[in-house]
Every structure is written in C-alpha cells, then in structure tokens.
Length: 344
Image 1 (spheres, rainbow, N blue to C red):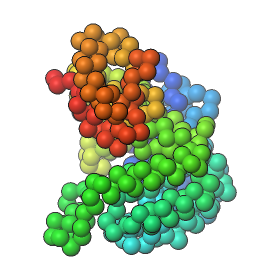
Image 2: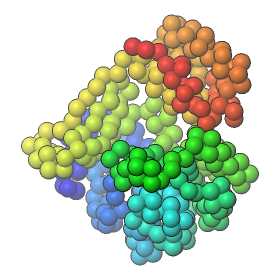
Image 3: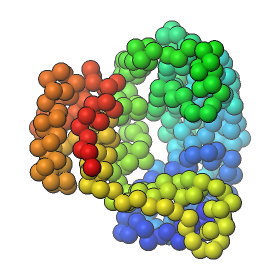
Image 4: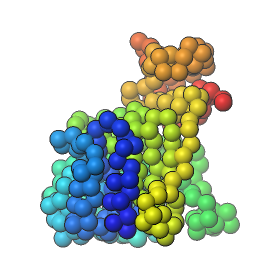
C-alpha cells in the first residue's frame, strides 16, 4: 500500500498548482499502524513532489490502544509534530457502548506518555452518550484537563447506521439521549474549557493560544487540500473529488498509473453554502464583503435578508459586516446555516 500511496502523490503533483503545503495529516482508518520508516517515506514523497513551508504541521491520528510508550518514542523521532488521540471517554461503560477497542487505563497512559514527548497534542471527547450523566461528563472534561493537553475536540455522539448501537436503540434496549441533554453537556464543555483558558475557535474545537489545528483551520477557510489513498477526499476550490473505497481496486488502478477518482464541480450556490456552513462554525464568522466579492450581489443581499431574524433573536451578530454565531446560537449553528443556504 505504501508504494501505491507514494505513486498517487507522484501522479497528482500538479493538482495543487503553485500552492505551498502547510500541513500534512495522517488520518482516517488506523494510520498509527504505520512504522516510522513508512511515515518518513510518505513525508519524503510529499517533499519531493510539492513545495512545503519550513515548519509544517504534521499530524498523526491515533487510538490510545495503538500508543504504547515505545510507539510514542518512535513517533517522536519522526517528522510527526502533532498527535490527535481518539480518547472519546474515560469511562469503561461508555467505551464498551461505543465499541471502542481501548479501555480507560490505556487512554490515560497514552496521554501521559504523549505529554512527555510531544508538545502539540489534541484529544477527542464525545458527549451525548446514552447513560453518561452530567456528573460523569464533568469528570471526563476534568480528567482531560488534568493532562495539560493544549487542544481538545469534542463532538456529539452520532449513531451510525447499521451499527450495533443503532440496533439496540431501535429495539428500545438503549434509550437515546434527548436534544436538551446533549445541549446541556455542550454548554458544560464550553464553560469548563473557556474557564481553563481554551479558546473556543470552532464549534467542536478548543485550543490554547498557538495550538489551533492548522489543518482544520485551512479546511474552514476553504483552502485547497489533497487526499491520498482509498476513500480520500480532495478539494481544489471549485471541485470536490474522492478516491475509490476498495483497497484492491485502488492499488490495481494506481499500478496502471490511473488515479481511481471521481470529481464533482461545485456550483456557485454550493461554494456559497459551504462557506456559510464552515464560517459560522468558527470565531472568525462570515464576511459579507467576501460573499459579495466571491459570489455576487445577489448572494450578499440574500444573506443580509435571511440573517435578520436570527440577529433579532440573538442567535447571530453583525459587527463591521461580519456575521458571527452568538453564544445562544452556537448549539443551533447547523440549523441557522441551513436557513441561510441558497438553493441551486
């Protein structure tokens, strides 16, 4: 597979034109199963085929059960300079319910080891888990804070289709969490992390000053990105594309020097909607001038009119021509954004 990934990088070296690579992200699946040598080969391929800034953010996603002290020491000797660790919860019952491979002790050990060898670390937590009380959720937050991790991402539990959890909820064996409870835990999260000195710079992201995710921030700002490997997605500013999911088909195609990819050209409305969705989730908001410059007067006038009721309700603010989500509207931001969408 490594050979195929390197070859895809070579085949697609002209896609980003004159863009300079600012971040490299190993994510999706289990990239932590790669050894240091394989990671170095892939990073070297990026450097050989693209222009890269002097100190790029290079992130590796990993699960706690993959991060022994030996593995973390090995990673610290590579060019990886940021770890994103999928903790999710420090309670055994939550981890079992979500069918996670790691346990609470492994989560704590991985964070302890990581903090010794890496400065830039992010961990993931999930709220809205069935039977997770507010008291337990607060313990989760406080436990995460105890490791001094500079970045925390937190998401509401999504019950994926065709999973055991979905089946158990459908049969009534597990009770789904009410929207009120989910919102309550989101508000607890925000309060505790802001109090601890984190900046709530995106709906699901909290970082200390200087530790915002550069990779994710680039995505929210609509910068082009290139995804390499099976199922990987890419964006060049006007087109979205995605690779075939099947590993065997992917490797066979790459061996024939063909990138197994499908592309979709985004309409002006699609690009506008994407800008609204991502912009309102961040502390930087949505610029009305940028909308007019990039999409035209029709879009600028449309969002000014559509946003009025949300401003009156205290969900949005308009300061110096920038729409931002107010605290009252943060949990409702996806619904607010959809109300501002332009239909094709």
